[in-house]
Image 1 (tube, helix red, strand yellow):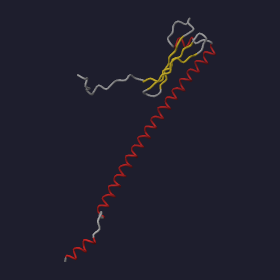
Image 2: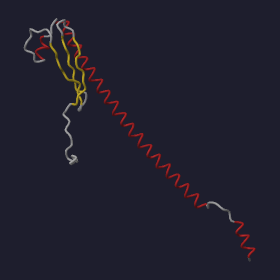
Image 3: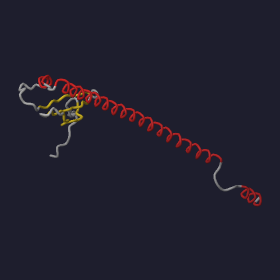
Image 4: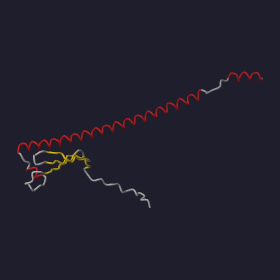
Amino acid sequence: MIEKERSSNNNRRPGFNVGSASIIMVFAVLCLTIFSVLSFTTSSSDLRLSHRAAKSISDYYQAEYRAQDKIILMHQQLLKEGNLDSLRIQSGQTDLSSREFSLQFTEPVDDRRMLLVELYFDSDNNITISRWNLLAASDWIPDQSMEVWSGN
């Protein structure tokens, strides 16, 4: 009888059984599935962000193009008429005796931003761009709904 027990112990192999290998395989497949889903969601959100950035840049360049067109029209009017009295009146200047003046206009970029352009016209009828800024279209209003610790 002792001999039979020794022979049956010799037939057993040390290591993992088939059940433990299956558990490890299921765990590995589950980890790979989770990482692939996370990769997909990250890449899709990056794609949406890239599309928004491209649209924002495109909108800015279109507004810049329209502003440059306005400047070109003003310059053509200056060359045609020799003076810009009509532009001075539009800019709100009542003193037409001065040959130097500045003019401001805005060009909308999108619903949140606008391009502010300020032009300076000197006595020799040259046009100089003195300001070219991208501004918020409306004032920023901070969120006051959450009470913040003031340090006291």
